[in-house]
Image (cartoon, helix red, strand yellow):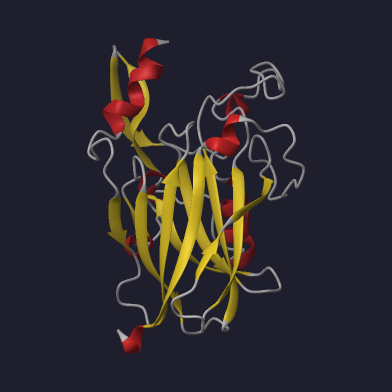
Length: 242
């Protein structure tokens, strides 16, 4: 089990403890500028994340940020051979299944998970933050003034009494996840420059990524609810006023 404990430190040692990471996506996009402020919780342990925009009818519009490993389908530690981690292509359907299936609904010809042959464009991605962070991003001007931001987050091997390791015997995808991915949401008025909105958990994803269903009962989740302490969205205003 030692390699499981040490793996995140080897993967994400770039951001020093206590620092707030800052990064930007969609720099060249015209629209409504946002800051998404993530405050890590007590159970934060290098989760994967995806953030995207939907309209008020629940239609997927475009991503704002997706963790680089998921966005490219390439993980630095894809397989363990000869006592060494090696990079390579890898798919983890249980990691961020709600985002993956929503993306597929928007573009039926696309894959739910990006691959090295069909990656997500660089404009939407970046290295996985290792703690608190501020993401500066843009909702495209083709989006109506009132929209929804969705944030899916998942942490590997996050077991509890309900989501135990033998719950789905033989299911390798479930074994990579344990407690399923948690989905947060906020409804944003793009004209409310200077306002800050707080995201709330609205459900969890399928436990091994088989469907894009959202399960609204969160009573079985424990530590997953403490990966994030709070997530806030500040509306900066339209790009042409910056």
